[in-house]
Amino acid sequence: MRKLLVGGKFYINRDKFAEAVYIENDKIMAVGTTNYLKTLPYDEIIDLTGKTILPGLNDSHCHISSVGAAYLQVDLSDCHSIDEIIALTKSFIADNPELTKHGVRTMGWNQDLFTSGEKRLLNLQDVNQISTEIPVILERVCGHICAVNSKALALKNITKDTPAPRGGTIELDENGQPNGILTENAVQWIEEVIPNYTPEEKVSFMAQALNYAASVGLTSVQSNDVAAPNTYGDFQSIRAIYEQQLTKVRYRHQICAYSPEEMDFILNKEALEPIYQGGFLALGPIKMFKDGSLGAKTAMMRDGYIDEPDNHGVCALEYDLQVDLVKAASQHGLQVVTHVIGNGAIAETISAYQTGFIDGKNKLRHALIHCQITDQALLNEIAQQDIAVFFQPIFLDYDMQILEDRVGQELASTSYAFKTLENLGVHIGYGTDAPVEDLNPFPNIYAAVARKNKNNEPVDGFYPKECVDLYTAIDAYTIGSSYLEFKEDEKGRIAENYLADFTVLDEDIFNIPLEKIKDIQPRMTIIGGDIVFERE
Image (tube, rainbow, N blue to C red; front, side, top):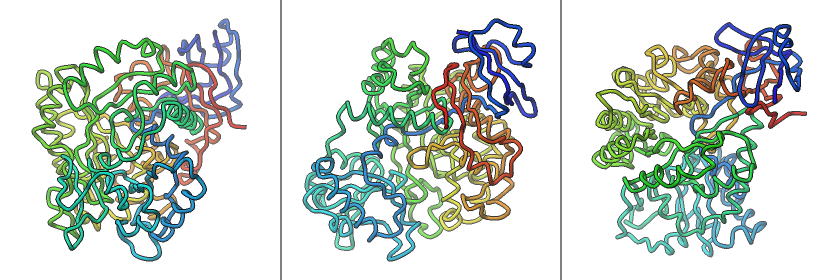
């Protein structure tokens, strides 16, 4: 099938644009003027009526299964008090008895956004007010800390003497009793008391989430769903989505694997499934979690937190084990990507990665996900070791409210260092970490170029020296994200022999006021030359 896309403003690179693209099957065969490309034989012509077209946007890190599961869970993201969380969850249980008969598990609350009552973490007494008959597990928006009720503690047989799982904590009150707060690996551990969703439910809600991704202009996602904390995916369910052709959004796995045997399974069994030859579903790196989050104060901080100097966060992956896993992955030829927020976690991970380098070089493109709290020495080390970074600029929308209170102004000034790492030549891709933030890429792009929140504050931007230009932000969402999955020679550009993946915009992103970028909506999403979403 040969298609001709005309009447558009196709973004090529920096200040370079084209007006037409010629597609054969799923590849771009020519880029140029309408008059020239019309001389070629074609079966269909699509007039894009002057719209601006980007290479297909590629979310470099998210959790599609958690985005999908949220359709079946109580939404606490807009709650502004503990009382509101209690009332909303009780109402959800009353309205959904079949769905909640085995318990309630959700994520989304954020104590820093409370505007009435106490501004603190939820605890056992709060969650017990929701129910003591079924287990209730409420994760903070970051997924790295949760509050549970007495039923959940009882089902897991947790007492004051229960040892926490490796890489997690069970918090105690002033009397030495469990206070219902668990962190890091203990979150996933206690959630085992609530049955997982059925395979049919997983296929349905993950397909829905992937098609939502297409509706916001994404043509590819790189998603951590298998064996990851706070997620619901598995290989079989995700394969079923593509075997049944329920979506065309391209998906690359980021897989949690904790032993050489699990890595062997990925390479020597899972990789042999025929669906991986189809171009829409791909295996990817080993995903690790080194620390927690800034908002939960579980990110690993070398010098502690400004307001809690003795708190250095939670190490979710001990260094010796991390080194062993990096070496095992490297021996298997597998890329490693690691969740790192605090400077302590980043420093240890850079060191661990070097033990898996090949001939002293990062040939497998081991990378850092999030990479938030950094000083200049760390930034230089990331560049010197050629370690790539998966950034989520949209995190600033919330984190700018707490950053200086957590780490101080000096360290804040060198953190979320989008521009500095770009200048140092580091390979960077953008993503959202959805469901922590929405999959919508345009508020994310706005955060990178303006460093302002969704209310366009602060006026001059938050540490504006780290703002990037619009071309850089778009490249990070396209060719940058493609580099992170070794696909920079076949997607992420509008060029000959690249995949025919496009995001068609309702506004000319290059010629609108800066604050309008976050409000852009895709008019059309095209994957492999096929229109998979079109806005009326």
